[in-house]
Image 1 (cartoon, rainbow, N blue to C red):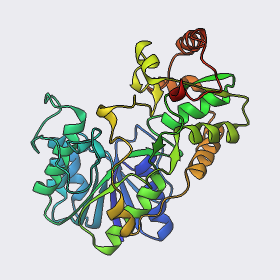
Image 2 (cartoon, one colour):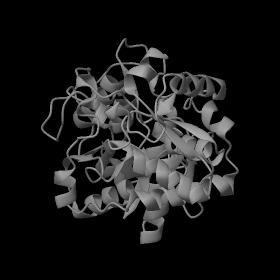
Image 3 (cartoon, rainbow, N blue to C red):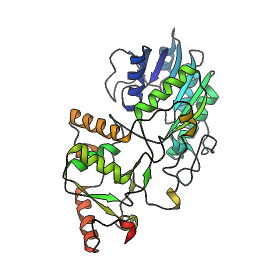
Image 4 (cartoon, rainbow, N blue to C red):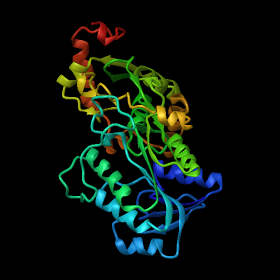
Amino acid sequence: MRLLVIGGSVFLGRDFVTQALRRGDRVTTFNRGRSGTDVPGAEVIRGDREDEDDLRRLVEGRRWDAVIDTCGYVPRVVGRSARALSGHADAYLFVSSVHAHADWPERRVDEDSALLPCPPDAGPDAEVPYNALKAGCERAVESEFDGRVLILNPGLIVGPREQVPRLTWWLTRVAAGGPVLAPGDPGRAMQLIDARDIAAFGLARLTDGATGRFLLSGVPGNTTFGALLDECVRVTGSDAVPTWVEDDFLLAQEVTEWTELPMWTADGPASAGVWLPSSEKALRAGLRCRPVTETVRDTWSWILEEKITRDRAVEGGQGIAPEKERRILAAWAATGADPDEHPRTR
């Protein structure tokens, strides 16, 4: 296949390029050259998708079997790209997010669940939350691209070259050793998916000529928070000891959900469906998900190779400050909590 990847130098986009080249596809990437290095073997075209002259230069005299768009965040910008590429590609794969669904994270969602309201021409200054902007981007592709449209709605994406350092932060924190502030219920089931598995699925569906929408959240219950941190301890060889602290206590200590302790949300009605998106359609269509243990191992290997530090992960907007973590652990110990006792049994 002849493929155009918008982006293609970091994380998921890079995985699409790498796997496509490995399959023998001819790949062109279109990006500004600012975020990451180019994958050897791909044709590289420099340009900005927000610049109409760059888009005209991109498509002039070229045609692809499919476009893969992994970095669309503003509906008006995505719509401009889709419009420019109409007639120059047969299919458009847009990577959206489970965030685009109106009922998530409160309830379980699937491909038929409603999307958040957002017009397809919303601009960068629109007073619309990020989640809704993704829904607007989907509508922009569907309204502006004249050809097959395939939309992927991933859940929480992890793996080597992680862009938002969630698993990266946990691995670097655990590697530092000592008592580790661990959030909530260690038995809470999660649903994670490796970026490499999303790329493999997307490429296979383009080859099949698939259209429509697929939720990609991984295999339900493919790990728990406790098992995830235990695996981080194992692969790093650390002496870290997770100390599990109740949700309510963390909230009282003003710990920000999802960011200060990445991947954590307090258990309750507002997050009842956070780890329950349905991947059933994708699994029936051939989605194959590697074990989370493999993802943790490979991500740690990448961290070592790239010499990524805990500070660098925090700079990516994730992770609790060490002094705040120590203060909370001391306050939790002062409650008389048994460190070996499950928080929910107290």
